[in-house]
Length: 205
Image (cartoon, rainbow, N blue to C red; front, side, top):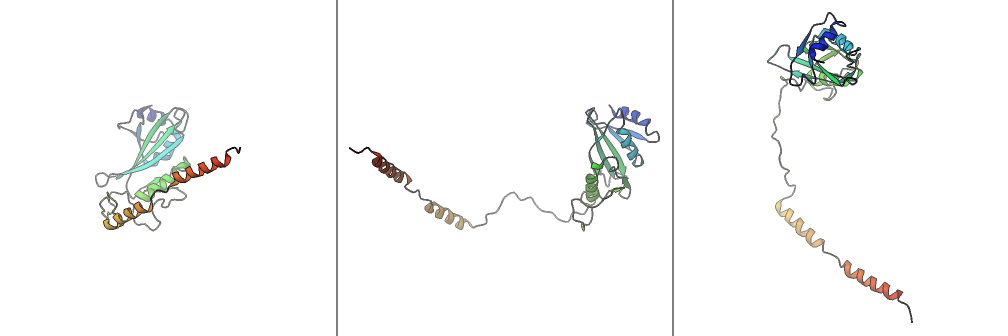
């Protein structure tokens, strides 16, 4: 189904909602729909209904367009219909001070991804029963994936591992190992043992 066909199917269940089809490079595989924040819960419930059957929550992520767009955030949801082998992408646009309703009442699996977005983007999900940091320490200040997050440390990539010993020490270690690993005369010892065993087993006249 295309985004327009999904919107038509949703109209009967959510008549007050306003939708906008989105164009992307993968629209043929994953149609995208822009949803108002206040219509998100009702839309997801309708998408689970007969004929659509988007009953599986895949993921939720976010994009920060600061300072080039207002509202600055896209909250992006992906839902899957296993029976129809179909996907749909929902986008909700919010500012940093706006809250988004949690999808946990509809899709309980959204709980941890929403915590991740709260932690890294600072997006608040109302109705979430355990909205706290997931990846950063509890006392961390700010949200690292926001475009205006202050970057205070610059470190060049390390492309080599320095030796822990000097060149002279390295050479001395190699020489020591060379002389301490002299081969032992195992072959001659084995040959003597074989001769002795054969002699003892020879028949006596």
